[in-house]
Every structure is written in C-alpha cells, then in structure tokens.
Amino acid sequence: MANKVLLVDDEAGFTQLLKMNLEKSGGYEVMIENDSTQALATALSFQPDAIVLDVVMPGMDGGDVQAQLQQSPRLSKVPVVMLTALVDSAELSEGAVAQAGTTTVLPKPVDLNLLLRVLEEVLPEG
Image (cartoon, rainbow, N blue to C red; front, side, top):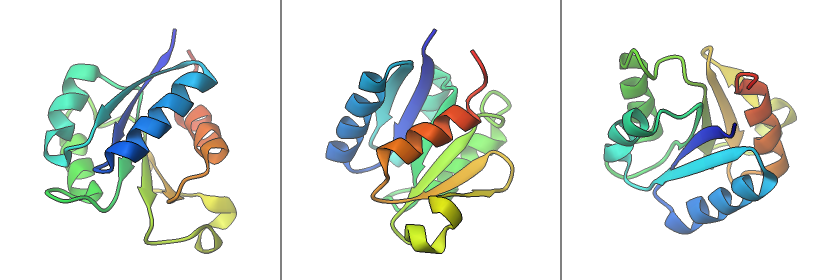
C-alpha cells in the first residue's frame, strides 16, 4: 500500500514537479495543497502518513500550519518535513537536521534523493 504524502507549498510548479517525482519513485500517493490556510482541512480529509511543508508562504507560514497540525489529535503524530530556503545545506549537518520530535528540516531547493531518504526514515513501516 502506498504511503500518503501531503505537499504544502505556495509554489504550484514546485509541488507539481515534486508530486510527479515522488509518485514516479513508487510507493507514494501524493496530494498537493498550495493554499497554506487550507492545509489543516486538506490534511484532515486526506489523512497523510507524512507532510512536506514549506516554511515561507503567504497567509500562514509553515510554523503556523505545523502548530495547527499539532493541535489536531488525528494529525499531531504525523511526521513533518519542513523545506526552507532560509538555510542552505552547508548550515545543516548532512543536509538535514531533526528538530522537535517529528520534524525534519531540509534546505530548499530540495534534493529529491535526500527527500526520499528522509521520507523512508520518518514513515512507518507499511
């Protein structure tokens, strides 16, 4: 059964490309939400196994969205991979740094192989 991944990023072209690459890699069912203010509702209806969340977005930033997710009993345990252009891979050990339990931060533009590896690490064995 495919792992369900929700992509939340205001850049529609980026999310379409990422969705295509994740689905092509196999094992992922991907849903896109380009409006951060709708991220919680989309996550509640889609019930993802992991969420890939941009940090800088209009309306609500990634931190605001994550705070909403943490308040939801159905979503608080879902692993979150935050993407940010505010740091580069040189600032992060091996391109990724784990933070606050279920959150991993990756530099943007994201390396697809690194994202796939991180998703494999955070997703429950299925």
